Amino acid sequence: QVQLVESGGGLVQPGGSLRLSCATSGRIFSINAMGWYRQAPGKQRELVAAITSGGSPNYADSVKGRFTISRDNAKNTVSLQMNSLKPEDTAVYYCYADMVALYGRHDYWGQGTQVTVSS
Image 1 (cartoon, rainbow, N blue to C red):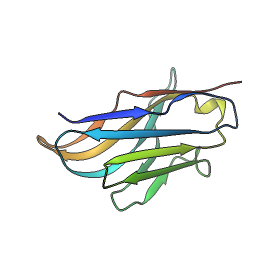
Image 2: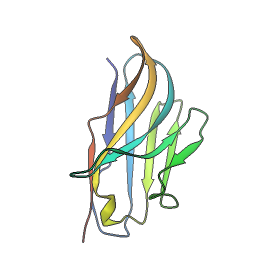
Image 3: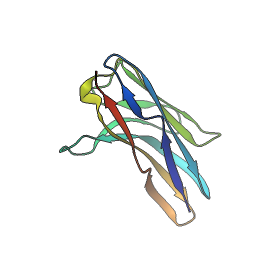
Image 4: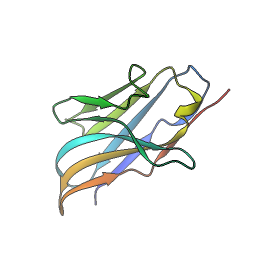
């Protein structure tokens, strides 16, 4: 059974930083893209950042220059360094991975971690 588990969320003041991490487990054959989505109350889930297996990142315009995505292919993990956080970054952040596992290729999701930016 494949699982993604996020960590690192919490409460931070505007202008502060947080680092989210996502660990994978289970019988994984290969991972294509990995990344982070977020969903704020009353809003649709949106892509924050993604990274290919080759390490090419892609960011939402709203986080460019503030967030940095990285991955460790040896450990099958992905991280999101969030700097200069704003109240509008408040949301539940979800890790995802496009993986080939025991039952084929699927998108797998974590359970989400809350990020709250408030003074």
